[in-house]
Length: 238
Ligand code: IPE
Ligand code: IPE
Ligand code: MG
Image 1 (cartoon, rainbow, N blue to C red):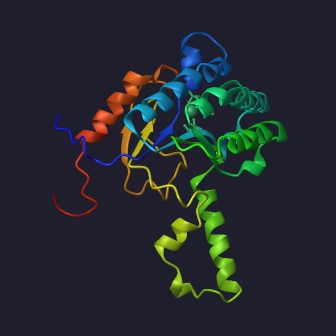
Image 2 (image 1 turned 135 degrees about the vertical axis):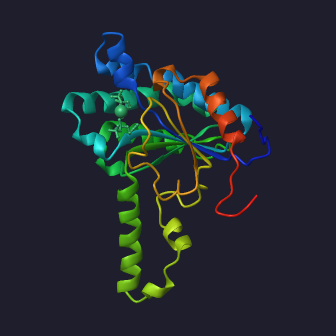
């Protein structure tokens, strides 16, 4: 496998899937799978820090995940608070800047306040941007961007002909974040499930059958090696 170590890799985005199946395989309730996800998150942060990746986006809860049973949703929301409170000091020490993407206003007050405190505490950190995608949907993000642009048109600041791709990008939730060069999905599913659909238009996709709680530093390094072996052409010729 020929590899190009100079291939730019600033942003890795991960669809952390397979927690429920991981638990079921062990005869455990699904929520135990969500609990077991924490170590994989630590490893991903660690590996990104080691190799100088600047942005790591983790798909933690989609706009569609609200349709799950209430008990599971409420467990995940409590787990989110627990994760933030239990890891904030270490992440801060590691110079990680915590950010989010998604419709945060949908979250219950508890986890939203914990997140906001973590964002504030780490705001001046200069290391890895750890972006948690929460109540995130790519279609919702685009819809929100289009509504903003449409209102500029309706108040006369823009005409439809002024709208550019760059303008759409700059109306997304985190306009400063570069598109991910690499999107990884664990658990064997081969779809985006509404994740970063605009931003991943030219991302390299790596699908692995490994379930998220089993996806550790070794597996992430393998996915990165796979990325480095790809030839990125962007429609041109080599
Ligand atoms: C991913 O694991 C976590 C969330 C979507 C919140 P799942 O809960 O989707 O696990 P599977 O896909 O059912 O195994
Ligand atoms: C995608 O996983 C969302 C997250 C990992 C947060 P899902 O398990 O919700 O996706 P589907 O239902 O398999 O498409
Ligand atoms: Mg799933």
